Figure 1 (cartoon, rainbow over the protein chains, first blue to last red):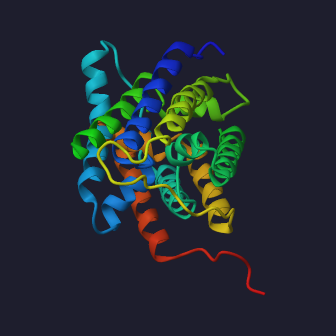
Figure 2 (cartoon, rainbow over the protein chains, first blue to last red; figure 1 turned 30 degrees about the vertical axis):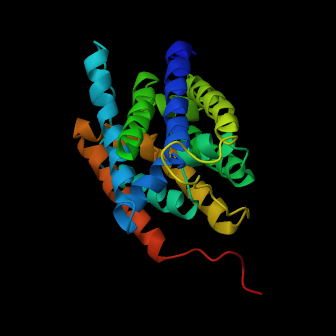
Length: 134
Length: 141
C-alpha cells in the first residue's frame, strides 16, 4: 500500500463534496457529471448552467497545474480497448442513470436505494474486471 | 449567478479529482485491482466527499428552495429496475478496463491525449445510442 495517499484523498474528496453541495444549495441540481454532460449534448433547453458546469470541470486541472508545482497525470493509450471501454461507460451511465458522481456521491448522500444498488453494482464490476484482466 | 454557481461547482469537483489524483486512470486502477499493490485512496476520496455532501444535503433540504432557483430538482424514479442494474454493470466493466469514469475523462480534455479524446468520443456515442435504444423494464410475460 505504498501508493496510498490519504491526505490528498481527504482534501480532494472534501472539494468534490463541496462542489456537489454547491450545485444543490445554489441551483437545486444533482451534480452527476454523466447526466449533465449528456443532457448538454442531447437534450433541448437548460444548456447554460450545464455548459458552465462542464467548463468548470475542464478548467480544474488547468488551475491545479497553476497551483501545484509538479502536477501531472497519466492518460490512456488510444487503442480498441480504450474505445470499447468508453462505449461501455457511455451506454452504462445513460441506461443506469448515473456515474460515480451522480450515484456514488449525490445519490448515496441522500440515501437513495437506487443509487446505493447502482454504486455497489459498478464497483463490483469494476473491481472484477480490473483484478481479473490486469 | 446560476452560471457562476455551476462553473464554480464543476471547478471544485474537478480540482478535487486533480488533487486526489482520481484524474489519473492508473491511480483509479490501483484501487479497483485488488490483486496487486492495492491503493485504498479512492475509497477515502468517496468517504470524504460523501461526508461533506450528506451532512450538507441534510441542512440544504431544510430550506424551501435553493438560493438561486425556485425548486430542487430531485429524481422521482424509485424502482430498482433492469436498466439501472444492466447499465451500472456495463459502466463498471468499462471503468475497470481503463480506469476512467466520465468525470476524470472530461476533466483531462486539456491534456489533448488521443486516448482521452478517443474515450470521450465513444462515450458520447454510447450516450447517443442509449438515448435512442431504451432497455426494457422487465421480461415480457
